[in-house]
Length: 301
Image 1 (cartoon, one colour):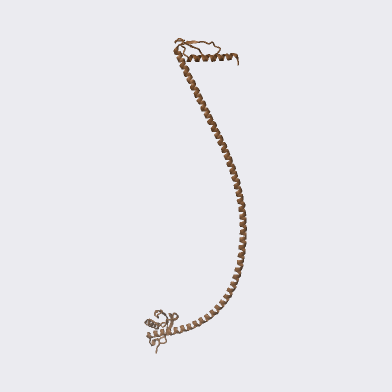
Image 2: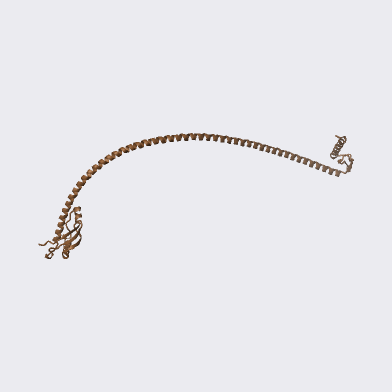
């Protein structure tokens, strides 16, 4: 350090001390109206000049200096507070950044663990799927083989059942054919017997009906003759008529089919007068008599 610069610093320091003493010490040995004022050296090379001031100026200067000191102290405190706040903010920001960094690292670690766990789970899942697929494949092959065996057994059983059924059906068919031949022969024999018997009955019945028809027809003609008024003018003449009868013998219709007109009209009056004719209770005989056609000839003596 240069000697001249050291000397200037010593002089500046001494002047500052001297000014402070002048500000805070009451100089009773000075007159009340005069105060010695020593200006601050702006330039150490400038000459030191002293100026005298009165008491009021000194008080004013003292007040200003005190206010300046208070302002400086306040500024220093504010600066200190600001500095402390900035330090606190800095520490908080550092803590926040540190916490953020920690959280980021923890998140990265957690994410890494999650990815690893996911990969592990995927590997395990793939492994399980592979084992399941292999097991399913084995089960399917086993099931397929079982199905093949089952189908073989079923086919063999069906073939055996079919053979047994065919043999049984063949035997039953042969038996049925034999029974049918025997039954047909018996039925044919019976039918022939029944037909012979029926023919005999029909012949007997036909003869009976014919006999009954002739008998009742004779009674019908006799009743007509009973109610027929005839004379010699009718001798040798005849009338062909159709008579329809109810089951009780009541005449439902009578029609002239041919012959002498006068004779036929006389015969129609005799039929209408008779009203009812004898009738057999046998339905077959009635069927033969319900619609009869006959030739009427008057009975003359």
